[in-house]
Image (tube, rainbow, N blue to C red; front, side, top):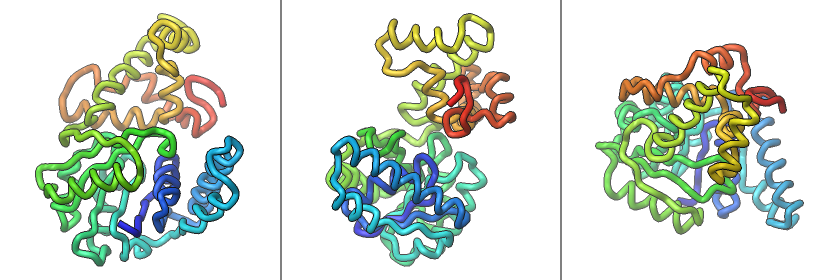
Length: 282
């Protein structure tokens, strides 16, 4: 896989593009507008400059990585890609539309189309893409350049060859550690993580303790590197809510249902770190 496409240049998409470009791969990022494309490019440059300041890369590598990344605003730029990773907003209607359109654009019969979704069923995406055997989930974690885990999620229609190619790609080319999950909402990590985060939000909503004390309790009492409310802000409250809704719709378990406070915060535009305010101000 020598040519990679990434749909969406937000927090996850820009991170994934940086990962593939740093692995020496020609990478195209597609955004919805020129303004969004510029923001994505700035995100990648800022991340690389932080790596430079920490001695992780040198000036020559920074320039080389940026030279491997092209930012576009037309899905047609993905036509010649060997692999496309969709990292658009966590909305099923948006993802289904993208898979329908990109599946028709890809020129190579063996090109693989993947989603970085946290919770949406992969089999639905494969069904509309026209290449169900070459569609699967590839779930990176934030920040993608740092986090070593990648969840690989084949659906009922994903071919064994597609899964094997992605396992080799993630391990050998990207240098990350894959785990395989079944095509169930939440996969492995979010099935464990999201109910924990929602419980912390319910605890705060009910007035058990302040946000700072809830987080301090889990950091100092359980050895977590970050408290659940700070982590929710980092992930994005809209993303947490979308994952919770998707998991609740599939399993009907009350612990997956977003609490009213989370609904209201998202409606108010309080998305967490990316919007400047969530459970904390940034």
